[in-house]
Length: 323
Image 1: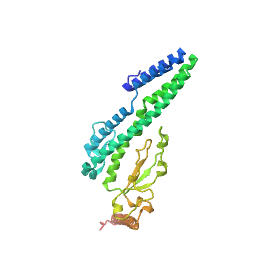
Image 2: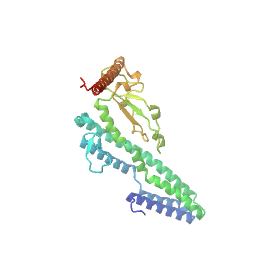
Image 3: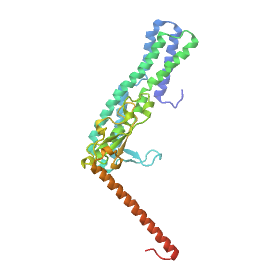
């Protein structure tokens, strides 16, 4: 067995080999009455390498709490300024001054979402565990009820059971991938929603939803591009926008809360990125004024640059200093 394998992977490999021996011995015995005993032996070996939903959830809580410690340390979303420069580099916050200044007020809500994220994880863990358990037991029962009769058939019949065993023992790793950014999404959502700078979000559907072993059964594909208002934002308070047809983002779920969801949100702070049905007359006027000011700025800047360029050319030709 390769030395670079983790202890758990080595244990799983050993369990697969042991179960292969048990099933091969059962098939060679040609004694159907041994089926219950054989199944019990297989399940005993499995118990030594399987992660239970409770144990997986405890590890997930540890990961979330470890991440929260990093968030608290920098008072925001942590990041390393220089990517790929090695460990030990200083970690900074990418969440801005407002989050840092108001972090203590936001922390209780973050802790609540940590508990909520752990609760969802446990529910998902039970679902995923039961799914792989059912698939494995189905193959095992089929083997025990109809064992191969010829020696040359034993190997091809044992292999699928061992392969399914591999999937079953790694169910928690799959769930870890599916939920890897769930708590981070919750923290970011709290920061952006409470900061006051953002007025809406765009839901961006991910095709990866369909490619997951646990595809998201939802209306998320129909949400792609939908613009949700952020409740009580500054533009609503000034009467510039109203919620669109899909309403407020806090009235629905957010990406990552549903098992298999790989969508994300694009946060919007500018009125001109909103659809027409969300703008009031005051909002449309604000957009018009903003675009006009931008046009004047760009035009004025270009005229000044052009005049300066012409003056420099005249000076160069006639030996005069520009005014």
